[in-house]
Amino acid sequence: MSHSAQAKKAIIMGATSGIGQEVARCLSEKGWLLGLAGRRTAVLEQMQKDLHGVIAIAQIDITDANSSKRLEDLILSMGGIDLYFHSSGIGFQNTDLNPDLETATLETNALGFVRCITTVFNYSAQHPEKQLHIAAISSIARTKGLGAAPAYSATKRLQSQYLESLAQLAHIRHLPIILTDIRPGFVDTPLIESSNYPLKLEAKEVAKKIVRAIEKKRSVVTLDWRYRLLVAGWRLIPRCIWVRLPIH
Image (cartoon, rainbow, N blue to C red):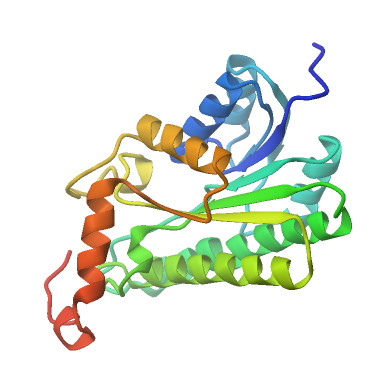
C-alpha cells in the first residue's frame, strides 16, 4: 500500500486499550500514518488489520529497561514522526497500602514514563530540522494527594511537572518540540472498570477532544468542563482541610 508523502506520522504508546486505542482510531480516520506500541502483540496485530495507515507495530513493555531501544527502533522504522502520544499507565485504589501495587505504579507511571518521554525528546533534539509534538495523558489526580490512590496521584503529578519542565527545556535549547499535558477525569476504560467513580467520560469522546487539542497545539487540557470546575474547587481547599476529607 502506498501512502502520501504528506501524511503525518504518529506513535501511540499504550495503543492496545482505553484512550490510546481510541486515539489510534481517531488519527487513522484522519489519515495519519501510525506506529502502534503496547504489551499485547495479538491486539496490535488485529489493530493493524482493522485500521488504515498502521505502518508499524512493536511489542513494548515500558517497565523493561530495553523499552527505550525498542521505541527508538520504532521511530527509525517509521522514518521519523510528527507526534508521540503516551497513553501507557496503571493505577490502583490502594487504601491498604499494598507496597507491590505502589511500586508497580511507580515503575510504569514514573520510570517507564520518563524512559519513553526522554527517548523521544532526545531523538527530536538530534533532528531539530523537524518539529515534534509530544502529548501524554496525566490526570486530574495530579491536583491533590489522594489517600485512596497515593502512588497514582503522586506519579500523575510527576508526569505533569515533567512535561512542564521539558517544555521549558525545549525553549532553553531552542528545540522545535511541542508538549501537551492531557488531564482527563475518570474515563470509562479497563483501568477503572471495577470502580464506581462518578462522572465517567466515554473514551471515544475523550479521544476526539484529545485529537482536537493536539491539532490546536494546546499545552494543557483538562477534560471535560465538569472536571475543570472540580479541579478549580479542589485547588481552593487548604491542605489542613483536604487531608481530613473522606475522598475515595
